Image (cartoon, rainbow, N blue to C red; front, side, top):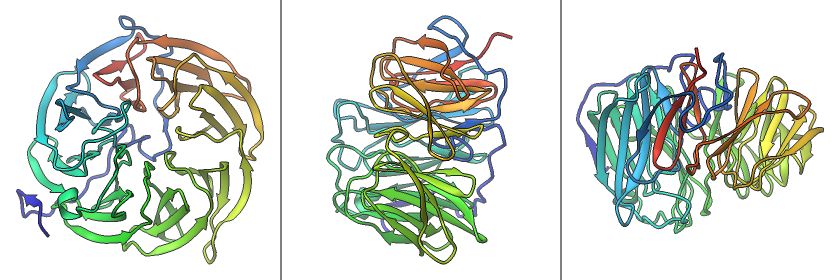
Length: 399
């Protein structure tokens, strides 16, 4: 296969991230929940900031944290065609390395977006970064190039004029790459050691910004991938279709596991119960718990979500609405995250609202960094790693 550059013939065994890491979009289990304690409630540009660091260009991706390393992606240049991967020391904010390459694919996107819209995914050995240009690269933890692929070169029919944002995820030695577009669309598993295809399945031609999620069931690992026509479960080992739920689906929010059920964005929030020998059963549908852009978080047996206009809603596992709260003005693109009894919700004005987790609405704090926030924050090492479009902050409670 063309456009593969491998610097090593050694087999790289993908290492699992440690329990407290945040190695991908929405964390270890892709659920937006951290078990860390003593997380900060209040901060400002000068309060409870352990460190901050500049990020080159513009990024709307989420940071990821594995061990003592924080990885971010960004894009710069007049055409947003300079693609960067930057690694920082998680404790001090010292830049450990910065690698940059030229884009090979289309750089057109919505003005609020960036070619650094998909979030990186990392393990103990290094990082994998997919850019909205369909450039895909892997570096080891010290910044050495392991391999690179131009997916736009391999598959020239890939087409998205408003920018891609689906993030890759890891499963064992496979990098799962979602690539829905107006042109060629597919879901593929790539070998983490050299980037070669292990399997590839065709998908409907349609723009989609959903990041897949993994689900364990009946001795198999399923990849749940939602699109405009519904959700499909694929076998992570070979790409075979396991089940499908056809409906008017969402194209941004990630599926969320809730016990033995799955929450997905459709006409509102839909709760499905997958079955071993049939397509899933619809348990309930809640228009009020749904959201256009944000992925809900399930925390301490309650569901939290926020609309793009900033109306936060809480419901129980039966889909019953418990409360709503109108948050500060701004557009809400980032998904809520949870930890230490708190729900954190960010908007593009730079304001993060901290809500107390529970069946009654209680605002604990509103924190204004006065910088545009588009990506979902990460929680690791007892701190919040929050990426604005041009900076990375490490926020922690006073000790």
